[in-house]
Amino acid sequence: DAGVTQSPTHLIKTRGQQVTLRCSPKSGHDTVSWYQQALGQGPQFIFQYYEEEERQRGNFPDRFSGHQFPNYSSELNVNALLLGDSALYLCASSSGTEELLFFGSGTQLSVL
Amino acid sequence: DQQVKQNSPSLSVQEGRISILNCDYTNSMFDYFLWYKKYPAEGPTFLISISSIKDKNEDGRFTVFLNKSAKHLSLHIVPSQPGDSAVYFCAASARFTGGGNKLTFGTGTQLKVEL
Image 1 (cartoon, rainbow over the protein chains, first blue to last red):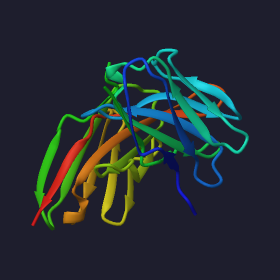
Image 2 (tube, rainbow over the protein chains, first blue to last red):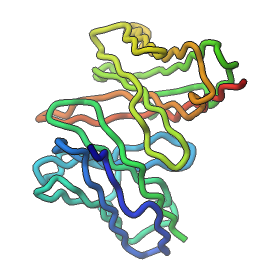
Image 3 (cartoon, helix red, strand yellow):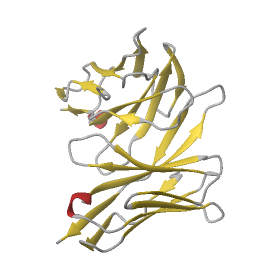
Image 4 (spheres, rainbow over the protein chains, first blue to last red):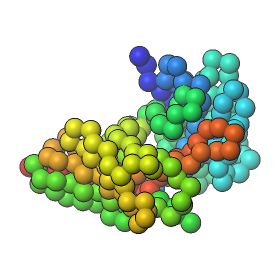
């Protein structure tokens, strides 16, 4: 049973560019959440997708957007990259009303 | 406004002894608490959780205690093993109106178990 998978594992971009990160949830899960983890910090909630809709959003600017597909996989898009966007981006999946989230290994984004 | 706090950035214990990791929270709406373990270059791995209606949950060497009145929880690992060396995150869950939930994480405690 595959867990949460994310791609790519590492990415280097320059300021002003755009990036797309991808996530496949754990088998049987229908809800995908995205978190940003800056160095030395805990993960911060970006947003959650369910039934292809953004269900809730954290305190992140509109440069951060997402999408969920009919197969429950998800993408995170970040436009107009800033140096401060450098972080580990984590995808987490869950099922129905469960509060337990399972995390992928993350995508390490470096903005130069 | 940090709603979940782990005030000890690091903890060092000897193999075989007890490790106690602490966490404090401020939001009374949190109804479920989790501990995750994280190794470098990996995502957080779920360790153990506790509902707000309980005060203790045990799973093998790991026990989580919840003191709602003090808004405090702790993770006990006994006996500690070298493989337990990792960063431990405390997380608190709040449900959204209409479904779903989000986790609010502390900043983590680096546990080192020494031989």
